[in-house]
Length: 42
Image 1 (cartoon, rainbow, N blue to C red):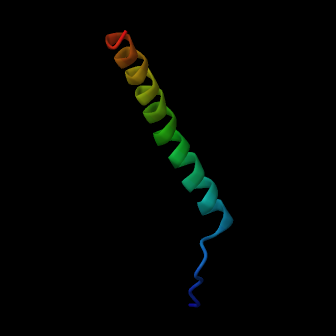
Image 2 (image 1 turned 180 degrees about the vertical axis):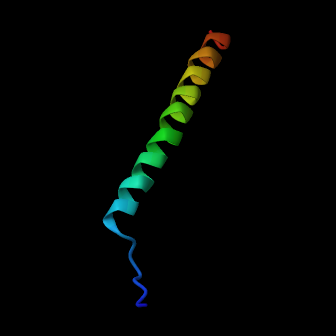
């Protein structure tokens, strides 16, 4: 069974989707926190 160094193209799509599912809510939370913190320093 030959091993390949690069993953199949379908795996890359799954990785991109997984990163989007994690990063979008994370970025929204950071943005929301920054907006609320900015109100404290007015």
